[in-house]
Amino acid sequence: MKTLTQHTMRCPLEERSAAITVRTDPERYPSRRHLDVNACSLRPSTSFVSSARRAYFSDLAPLTSYICDADATPRHHFEVACSKPCLRVLNAAEPGAAESVRCTSGVSDGLELARQTLSPRAIRPLWFYSL
Image 1 (cartoon, rainbow, N blue to C red):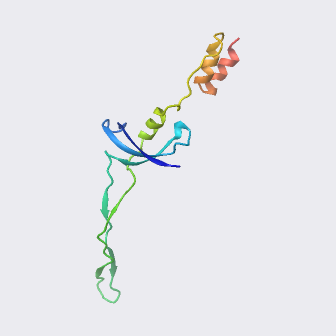
Image 2 (cartoon, rainbow, N blue to C red; image 1 turned 180 degrees about the vertical axis):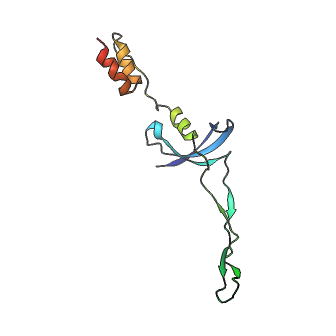
Image 3 (tube, rainbow, N blue to C red; image 1 turned 60 degrees about the horizontal axis):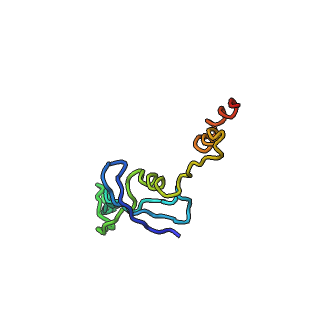
């Protein structure tokens, strides 16, 4: 079940306060809960009018064009035109996104804390060379 939620935050791109509307799935894991930015006060949706289609008379010697299907109805872009780094910020700030570091017994906690916080590639030398 996806819902729209509103947040006020500091934009990582422009360093100004922004009001954003985000499509959120409350059922997902906290670090992936916010899915897409639907609206942003710093990047309002832009409207445009599609260009008129031109056609040419086929029976006239110098090609002469005429307007075919002129539509003056404004159209709107509904996507926010930026890289949306605010989604990463919102997902990282979500409660429960990062697992809390916990100690074990008090004896040899260094290796356990390293296992919980470092990547497996960084842990491998610690395991091989520790006694």
